[in-house]
Image (cartoon, rainbow, N blue to C red; front, side):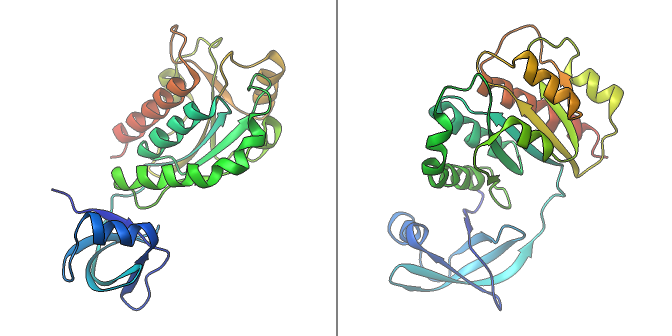
Length: 244
């Protein structure tokens, strides 16, 4: 059985401190004791560490050794059009499991009116969801989650290879990846996913002008959250297949 992984702000001189709810979980739920071993991540590296001591509200760990991690397969920024917030949370949870590096909510013309006003109040919750999902999937760290931006701003700042999912497009995603793009470990890529109802013609023009390649996931119309995760899954498999 894999050891539980905890995230810490920093590791200094071979020691780290877990505080707050995490420390409470260790002590009261896991019934952890001094000397027991867990994995710690500072967001960059992962270590094997053992509990050195407990104090009120915190647990101190002593680092034993670094644990090697697989190289980064693909550095993905997910630009996801804002949809109903419970569904957007589902995107955050599952996209974290699929290894995205960054998630940016995008205000599209067909996003429900006023959703962007709720984003600042939701960011703390969204980051907690990403953190828990990162633990479950044994990531080195959770993705960064940004505030909501308009489409033009999102397009201008999109890094690397640029793909946009579009239900009106006929070019399969796999075909576009085979024909147009080299694939190397650690590549940077941006995947743009639209809202329920799809993109407007004006938005399609914007994405093309910004250098995005429109691709299709097939003739079946998917919900926005489903399309986002299927698209990420395709990317993972393609880059995994070319890892060697």
